[in-house]
Amino acid sequence: MYKKKILIDLDGVLNEYKGNYDENYIPEIKNGAKEFLEKLSQTGELYLFTTRNLLLSSKWLVANGIDIYFKDVTNTKLPSYLYIDDRCVCFNGKYSDTLSDVEKFKVYWK
Image 1 (cartoon, rainbow, N blue to C red):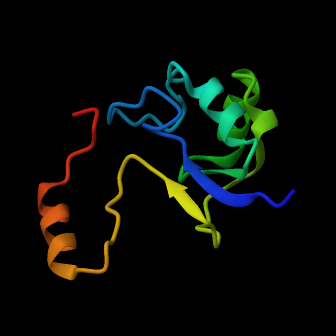
Image 2 (cartoon, helix red, strand yellow):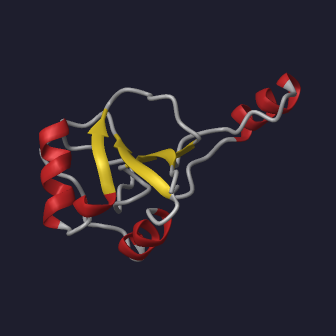
């Protein structure tokens, strides 16, 4: 079965990140993340997309028992069907809407 490639951000999506970045510490896994990944992996080929240290991020996946859902960990924006991130604006084809969305943007955890 063909699976669509999906890149998933780490901070704020899979963990309890609240803006307090520490390069040596990745916050606890978010409640419901394992179940979300299990279900999503049935139809998607998942990649962890992060700007964090890739080795530290990979170890975090293993420590939380969710490494089995990911094909790879990357800091490169790979060609994909979909990106899941807490810091994004979805372009709807209208620049005026996008400018407005950028001006109003707030991450959900603030």
